[in-house]
Image (cartoon, rainbow over all chains, first blue to last red; front, top):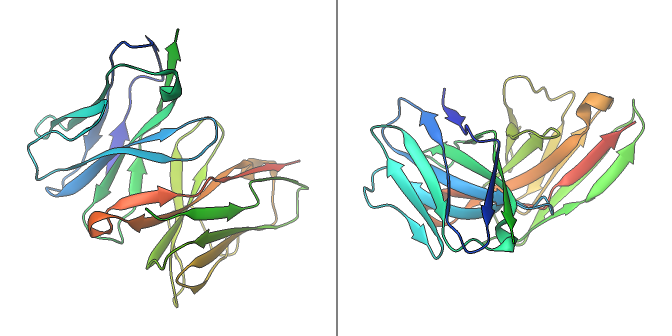
Length: 115
Length: 115
């Protein structure tokens, strides 16, 4: 079974600064996908970024980038130039390959962006 | 990405009653997923619903408590039966789409409070 661990329950960052959210996971699979989801107070789960395990290059999406360390089973999210709208819960998630496989979520990190 | 509509967005129910949550997708999808998010916690998969077959339930969830229907490729319902206060949670519908059906998209969730 897969497990996903987010060791930072809460974090705070000032607007325009950079923040890194940590995620580690445990799996015996070699091929899989990793995701970061954002859940603002509206409850909507929004996909922020995804990473395929077979790709060595770290994924980037505008201000969001990841540091994927497969050997260490680490998958951190870096948010650059933080904006007030980034305030939300952030969940790291794991998915085995195959369309029937479920998402396994971490416990989440609550990020507060302040002025 | 798919547009997923969930109804109701929230409800307050008496213990012992049942609530049916609807999930409508704007495109045909093979698999739909139902998650539960208990207060302050992460998401846990309840079951996977394929059109034309019985739903597959995760450990700890049973059909009698959470019956699911999947009458066509764009619609599913989840019923929370014989509710107790412990069932107070956010319930989210999800579909797999995107590249290789590896990305999960979510409805806005149903916030259920059982009194």
